[in-house]
Image (cartoon, rainbow, N blue to C red; front, side):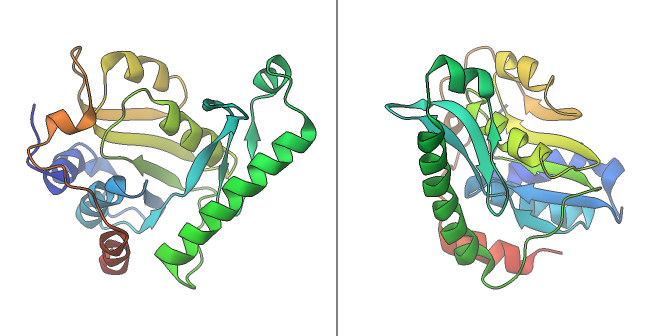
Length: 211
């Protein structure tokens, strides 16, 4: 399965999510930057509000690819205590890394939203969208952070992800919607004819034009 571009992928995903159309409690969240383009098409089709979801994993000092937790903009961090113990991460290190990541996310929140507050998540059916999932580590970090906000239901939607990644992500969410789950997977971009980088200006424009 090959997608023409992110817009095409978003429209195809929206076809699989029509049961959530015209519902007052549904919220679509796009992961910047590419995920917002896909999420915009879904929000437009479902006539649901759209927002960005700004989260980031907290990397072990010196091994930043290994996450000891995750944080979302404006919210306390989610911490994996067993990793903190096994890697001997001190409380001061946890506080320093969380503060650095939180400042970065706050800057991006101002860039994308301006002075608009984030749309509230608690008690809503949330559809979290990206333009593709590779290892699943970043998506798991986003899901972990989002769970702290108490959504009524959490759905992850992506056009493409390896079957192995989908298998373990399904255990972390209420529903996973993925259109293509190939065994031979090298990168998300290989399944798009056009996979140009999405700019900050494009993210801002889609948020302004969303339902």
